[in-house]
Length: 233
Image 1: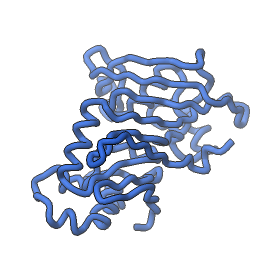
Image 2: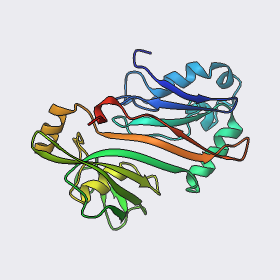
Image 3: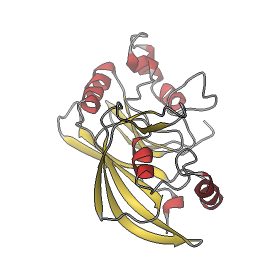
C-alpha cells in the first residue's frame, strides 16, 4: 500500500481504521487504484480465506460500511461473519452514532440545526444526489463549532450527526442550506470549488467519531480518528 492507513483499534473481532482522503473504500471495476479493501484483505487474509466466498463479509473484505472517496476518517471492519452481520444490523437499525467534522462556507444561522429532507438521485445529473420529494428519508443535525476567515472567505467548522446513512447525505444537506462543504466539487458550485481546491486541495469532510455496541462484549464502544492537519486553524 502506497497510501497510509492508520489502525485506530484492533481486537479479536473488529478493526477500526482511519481512511485517508482520496481512497475508495471497496474494490470496484470503476475505481482503479488502491482501496481500503486491499488493506483489509491483506490484514485479514487468514480470516477471509476460511470465509464463505458468497458472503458479504468475504466480498467486502470485512468492511461493514463505507464513506465517500474524498472523505477521510473512521471506518469499521469485522474479522468474522458473525461480527460482520451483527454490526450491519446495528447500522441498518440506526443504532450506530456517527460524528463528522466539516469546514463549510459561511456561518450557520443558528448554533444547532436539524435538517430533515429526503434524498435521492438528482433528475438533472445522475452523478449527483439531491433533495427530491420521492427520495429516502434523511436526517442530519449540524452544530456550529468555530468561525474562520480564510482569504477573505467566511468559513465555519461544524459538527454533523447523520441519523440516516444516505449517499452524500451531509454534503447534500449542507449545500441545501447554502453552506456547502469546502472542497466539494459536486455541490459547492464552480467559484467556490476553485477557491477551496486552491487553498485546501481536498473535500473538507472527516468522519471523526463512531459509537456502536461491541458484538462480543455488548458494551457501547466509541472510537475517534483525529482531525487531519488541513483542519487546523
